[in-house]
Length: 444
Image (cartoon, rainbow, N blue to C red; front, side, top):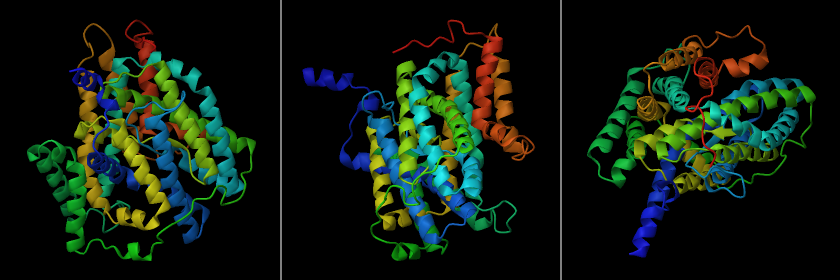
């Protein structure tokens, strides 16, 4: 009887599932975030005119460090890591500043800026976490909705094949077929599968979609044969870091933006898994970002933050265990150390990812709507807060170059719909509601 009571007292976030389920659920998370994870090293390598071997090294280093960062965030130690199912990946907010730094001062200056910005984030986390009182339910619900809305264009581009919308091949009938057959499989498995099978609907959809694509000649595994079996990730492969004051300041600005996004993602995941995030837990979450970014600079990788894509997967599967995402971290480390494994994952067509992405990102929006349904909209200004915040977050979705004439430092904030919408929600809440009892979040 006492064992049953103990089992019942374990929060779903801390539940350890059987190995087979941990692996399947963890792999599902990895497949959902893989394309986004490798996009940043590819963009930076192209801008820096790196060799193919250097690009491969960047991708392997990125995946390896993604895994370490995810383990730090999910398992935690001391006062580091939120211990929630939050997978870590490279922040896209860092892409433009890194390219500018690398072009002007070389790639070693990128890593010098990343290392110091990571340390800054780690030490500022306890003070930054005090801002959680500015995230009442109306703000967090709005942010969750914004996260889903701003991610949908990613899925749409994947559905079209992942290339430029101006390409003649974009959204051709084959891409659309693969995307929607994958989405159909996800929906059918989710609806008619039972228990574990229903929970891995996205994984089954991705596998089936890839098999169909292979049969139709839309993907092949030739690259797997050309890949190495094992690759060693060595610190400072591009040389010891150099430090430029302007570069460091620009990367610190990036990390301040990342901290705002991480706050929103952390609170969103806490809402979905039923584990409210207090100030101390948020500080642990932000410290993990800082430590992971510091490690990224050492291992030739990049700044790290929560991957919003995977928030939707938690909502779809209803699997809340942080050890599932810790399993994802181990898989990511393996992908970084074994390039042949990473090559297998890379064979998944973008259109197949897009079909699954529609379900995942749509579920984030649904979770945001559910959170907002608990908010009181009578006799206050909450409706205006939600409306304006979501509207402003869609500016760059509608016209990506809208802020092109602004200074580079401002564009870091303005070009991210999630950051811009989140900051708008926080500011409007202060203007319209103040920091009253509703906005106060109890410390753990």
